[in-house]
Amino acid sequence: MTAQALKGKTLSDGLRAELHERAQSLTEERGTPPQLAIIAIGGDPGSQVYLRKKLEACREVGVETTVESLPAGIPEAKVFRLMAKLGQDPDVDGIILDQPVPEPLDAARLLEAIPPEKDVEGVTPHNTGRLYLQKSWEGIRRSEALVPCTANAIAHLVLETKAEVAGRHAVVVGRSTIVGRPTAHLLSCLDATVTLCHSRSRHLDRVIASADILVCALGKTGVVQGSWIKPGAVVVDAGVNTADGAVVGDIDAGPASARASWLTPVPGGVGPLTVTFLLFNTVLAAERRTKKTLG
Image (cartoon, rainbow, N blue to C red; front, side, top):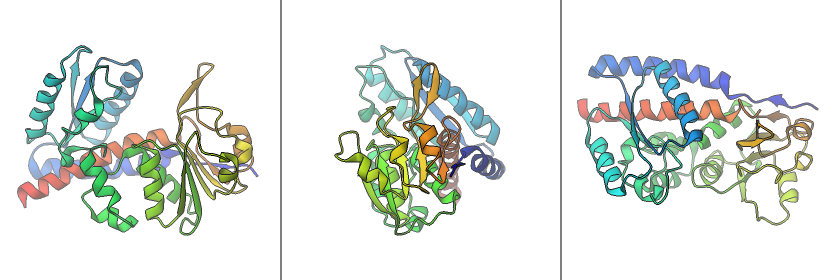
């Protein structure tokens, strides 16, 4: 068996074409395009690369962007004042805080200052609560929740395989608040039976060997062996690591490909779709705010 490549680009291209049309409709309806404000503090090199990708994607679908570049030593109070200003700006539909933020700034405290309706990364406590109150995929779609972008990308990639999800055993390795935990919740809302693991879970190899659907989001190479994977499993590798100058995932792709039915490449799997779901959330937030404003 050789796994089929589960690439995010095909799904991403189709969704971006749809978002371009929706952004155009919004611009015609209210006279201004959807607008995303990005707060970048300190100029972290990794963040700068991701920032450029976000700006290019925004231009592609017709989302206007403003970047607030702040120095690393800026007092926290000044960041809060900027966030309050953007939160009250009627032209701004979405706000994101580029991470990591330099110390001693507290990212968690800063994120709480983003109004829930403009939290297009789905990371504020209010949006998190909205998400976890739902028990079904349809409930999430009907709710006011803005879903974390990477978790949403992973769930859609699993659905793209057309593999049966309901009643299947899904294992998520990694318990971060923006990827692992929300991914586990989304898969549960798709009626999978979900086990959430982490780097200190006992008998990790046995748990993974029982997974019909496996998602790895540890951000560490070598923790998950490809030989553990159940034959025929759908495998999503959301890890992004650097090894010998190359970008690699959490799983050794060679042994994994020999056992899985579907496997995301790294890079080219989850990443392209994550950026697209940031655009999706921005356009969705703009549509919701326009509906409330214009009735």
